[in-house]
Length: 247
Image (cartoon, rainbow, N blue to C red; front, side, top):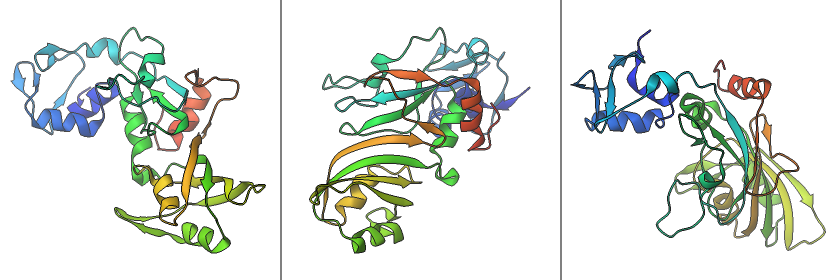
């Protein structure tokens, strides 16, 4: 069965659909010796080359969808390589016989906690897409005085430099220290550093930030930082159902 080229390559783990559209537009992919263009369709048995290298689609597309709940620690980066030599999350992942691991979104270097990693490019794309509004949960320690009026503003919406943003819920988790308190927050936007920027907009500082949930997946207990737990088939189906994808 034929399929749009970028969609098939994303399912095979060669990148996100948007990244692959850019690669196609740059003329870096050939289908049966013909330079591919956006809108082209292909089959796994076609000879498809990227930058001159023949892609092994038949083997990759036979791989079942896998998802890891990875527990990132601070100082790790969500990148395959770092010129500064910092550790990356990909160094800790299990080896694959074919395909590759794809991180669902990012956590900045100073944020710890749950990061989903998958072999399925289409699942990654849908979970990241803002139209699906997948809920992200965080535990956050805030330094500074936080009052009810501030919480109301953060729930109602704050104008940031890239548009309006808000928390869906805020719960006080630790009220023992008025100037350095823990909160549990949820947000449906995957924008860059949005949790930190929301609090910064109110004149307080985030001193610690940990993601505790992504959609139906919670931060796995009993897993050390830098470790992971693989989702079973039922958990993958529940996660995929959030974004209208059958897996």
